[in-house]
Length: 196
Image (spheres, rainbow, N blue to C red):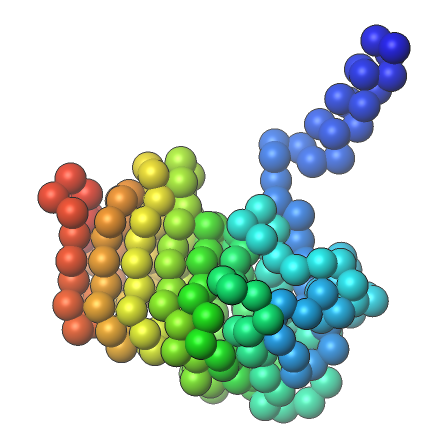
């Protein structure tokens, strides 16, 4: 009994070293975020892996889209969630649409405006807790309000940050790294440091 428990524990530790998040890859072109058939455990692999949650990275790459201007609709679940959201490896222009809120508990990497068209209208929430993450928007303007809200979360901007709405720093630390922040209003709770 003890040996089985020890072997089970070792499998869990070595299968997921350091508590690293699992990664799902978008496949199959246009579709709803909440459709498990669009998520694979491997790039270009079969769908059906499930739907990302705050412990799963969401990656979009050269195998995600089969034609230009296909669409990822932020629909199909009450809130769009993932750990990291990574669009750096897409090779076709894509549109992001829908009205659900987006919660990212890890890093964010977009590609520039020649690759991504935003028509989504949901609030974007950065919810990293007890970790350092980066927010790289590649010059993209996030089309609605943004909230930073993570216990002891640390967000580092890697480029200028544009929001077509209000920006709120409810919890955590935001470091601009000398990049500009543009939005309608910036609100911060008095105990949150902003490093500019």
